Image (cartoon, rainbow, N blue to C red; front, side, top):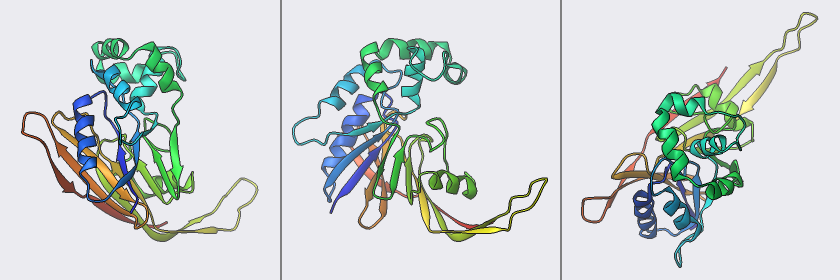
Length: 255
């Protein structure tokens, strides 16, 4: 049985990453692919050590597939390699001290490597990205309207969209339905068109490094389409333990 382990939001937290790797090794089913959906780095002193650890996995460890996230985009902007010349979102959300720390904790060499990362991955009928098909900064959550979720899935014709920007673990299922559209202009009106929607889902994969002592990630079986959320506790307690969590939302699309 081929399982995927899907991580996001390590944010430079080396201890959290090590705890999750150890938990993956103890899974009853073999994990054959390891994804990191962005926010690998962050404003932490050990960010460079984390990158070195990820790029040099130990013997018998999986080599992770990594895509860009929000923190990677902020690093590129700070080094003049991003889509804009400044970082107003970063400053507004975290302040100048965090900007300075991010600049000091992530080297220019690492930023050049971050620049080479993919936007996301498309495997089988699954799209794996940090934010959404619109951009790395968009947060999809259980409160996102069904029509918006459907749009993000339809842009890449995916049946399963895995994302990590919100930091939440959730399984948002779109049931079968239909959408009827009609275009009206000043000159004429086109006949209505009906599009049939097949069942699809958006999965929030959790966040590894944001909460000290607690990391969440996702296991996925592409053969059965089963999703399992894992919580790993680490730090002061002896060893660590895992806990199964599941948050599911069903939506029927009929517009």
